[in-house]
Amino acid sequence: MSQPSFDRGSAAPVPRSAPRSALAVIGDAWTGVGYARFFQPFEHLRRRGWDLRTLGRELTLVPGADGPVPESGLLDGAELLMFPQAIAAPRLADGSRVRLVAPLCAEARRRGVPVVWSVDDYLPAIRSANPSFERVNDVRDDLALLADAADALIVTTPALERSLRRLGAPIHVIPNAVDPARWRRRPQRSGGPRVGWAGSSSHVEDLRMIVPALTRLRRRVPFTLVLYGLVDMELDEQARRIRADRARYSASQRRTADSFLELHAALRPLEPRHVPFGDMTRFFDVLPQLDLEIGLCPLLDDEFNRHKSALKAYEYAMCGSLAVASDVEPYRGEVTVTVANDPAAWCETLERYLRDPRARERELAAQREYVLAQRNIETLRDRWAEVLDRILEGR
Image 1 (cartoon, rainbow, N blue to C red):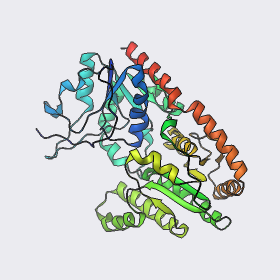
Image 2: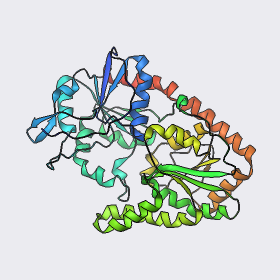
Image 3: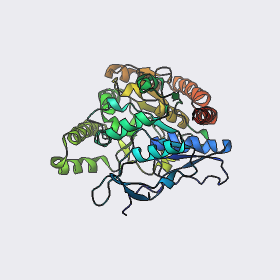
Image 4: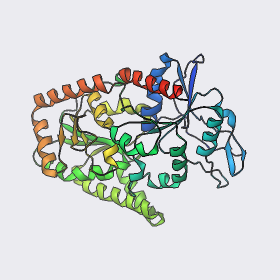
């Protein structure tokens, strides 16, 4: 039978003697979410006897009543079955879909294996312009099945816990964290102030919000704008491809594409230095090398964003870049420098910290101290171990 393909990754091997094993319904390759919510915590749980398994390069399928399903032996040896927040339904060469949620949850229930749903976004509020909208909408039936089948949820923020409480399953809040051992400080040799932003194309509207502030700031203080991510190619090339292909896009894809084109046009006068996305394993080297004095965390205040975490700010702090964030729920209480979503306020705050290196260093020191004490996987691994043990005990 045909088999769906999953990206090959670079997760480190785990000890064969580990007495406890969790099966995560993800591929082997590191993504931002996959690393933060699966690979990183389980790297630190090895010493507590945990092993993380993933789907691997190929998933063996067998005939099912409604089409191909994973073979039941996939769960052999697993004590937990863990799903990411948005599970894919791979399409085979013949066009048929592989539904993973129903058969795997049914087999887990038959074996008495708890089903855990790891959630870090509030998907019911996802905007149609979000690049993931169609993928999420495509598996809404699977998400509803998973919401019903989950024995427990692990979420990143109290906001998610409040909004998902209606599902009835126990919810455990474990914040996103950084691993200090993976991070290096920025080199501080760029020769001039740098202000930068790192993120995915799901944040196009958030970044576009502060372009007027950056334009105003450029007239007051010379700085280099650095962008990391958005897309995996040069911005001009992405814009060219969008214009060439736009007529074939769906309505939601056109909204996403048009938002990018508007951002691209707005950024042009600022002449940003852009570093396209690459292999996630290089992220820990690339972000410090951007050599940013200030890392930007703009976020529109809407229902979807209010459920997000402040991980971006933690990563800037670990690089030695001061995080300046929107004064919205994910960042309140997590970041020392927050600002109202107003161009004048953003411009004033950024100018103050660009002109005053001592103030910038004081705030950066406070941000690093908080991250190392409160958002450090070396301490939060104990919380992970406690939660997983409680889920197993509740079985």
